[in-house]
Length: 191
Image 1: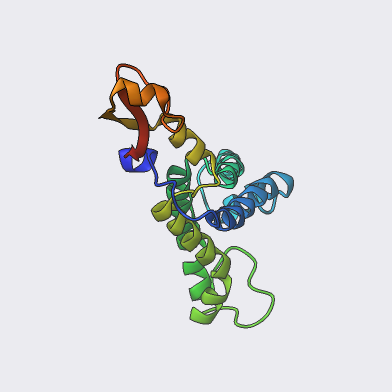
Image 2: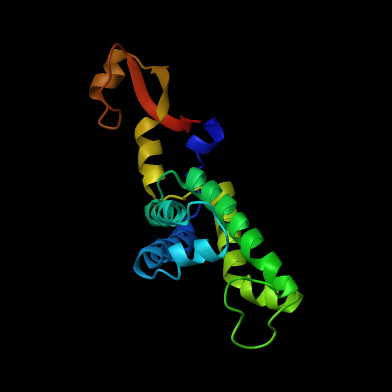
């Protein structure tokens, strides 16, 4: 559990690009499930999910909130893990029937309409989202994230005590003001 809640935050700042890609797609897909019935309740009804209205609203809310969490980089590992599971369930519940040509959802508009090539074509965005979330699960949110801000505010710094004679300490413009002949300086954060 500690691994989820204390992700590495020293990764490249460019991780923001992956967070924006994955987060915005989940965010707007969540909104679409509320705006268009065929994307939300209708889709879950056709797929045979129990309580399709509740399921659609829970999934849509999770996508909106989770998408925002990824965009801002807060609770990134937990959110990425949630989305990986959600996307695997989505793939299993829609693409297996597409492979056999018996999907309750509309068939692709152009060939291939069934079989492995149809699945590979239709799975492309799901695959990209899963891999993007896998990356965020492993690497964390990076430096440009709220995870970084929270982590930096919680860091415990080791205190290094170096004894300096008081006469040098008082006269040196280069040494920081200290207490009882010791210089206290924060060093690398302890993880």
